[in-house]
Length: 248
Image 1 (tube, rainbow, N blue to C red):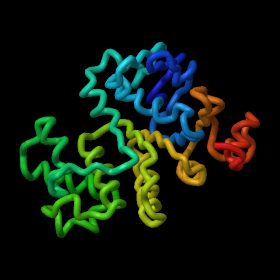
Image 2 (image 1 turned 90 degrees about the horizontal axis):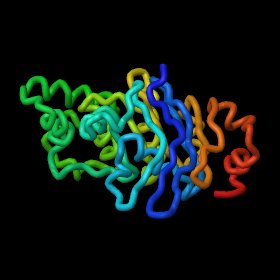
Image 3 (image 1 turned 90 degrees about the vertical axis):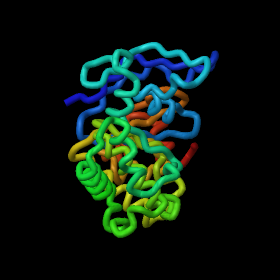
Image 4 (image 1 turned 120 degrees about the vertical axis):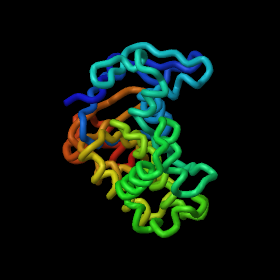
C-alpha cells in the first residue's frame, strides 16, 4: 500500500532551487533509506513531508505530496506533524523528566488519565528499546541520559503520539557504534507498524536497514530501487560512484 505519493515536487528558497521534479512513492511498513552527498536535497525533501520547510522565509514549492491519497496541504499542519513525526540528528530532550518527555505529546493531545499516560510511556520506551535502561528512574532528568539514550528517548517521544510515518534525519550522526546499533534495531522492529524514512550519510547504515534506497544528487532523484539492487547493480553510474566513495 502506498503511504506517501510525491509528484513533480520542486522547491525553492529565494531563487535557489533545492529539489527538482521529484516523483516517487513510499510504501507502508517499509524503511526507505535516502543517501547522497551534502547539499543534494535529502533533508529538504524529508522536511517537506511534514511541512517544516514552510517555516523558512522565501520558501516556495510546486507539485503535490499525498498522505494516504490526501494532499498534505489540506491537512491541518499540527495534525500532519502528529501523523508524520520526526527525529532529528541531534537529540533535543525537553528540560523535564524521562517520563514527562514521553508523556508531553499525549498530554498536549488531551490524554490526562494517569494510568493511560503510564501505559503510553512504557510502551513507547519499549518500542524505542530504552525501557529496560530507564524503568527504575523515570523521574530523573532526561539530560542525565547518554547521547544514545537521549536519541532513543526522542524516538519514544515521537512514538507516544501514535504517528503513521517517522522521519529520521541522520539520527546516528553523533552516536557511538553501540548506540547506533540500538537505534537501528529499534527501526527494524518499528517498520512492522510504521513507515520509516531515513536520511543518512552512512551508506553502510542505509544498506543495513533500508528495504529500498533512494539516491539524491544536486536536488534530483537519480534512482530509487530495492536496497540490494542499489548496492550491487545500480542503474546509474553516479550512484555506483557515490556508494564506492568516489565523491561526496
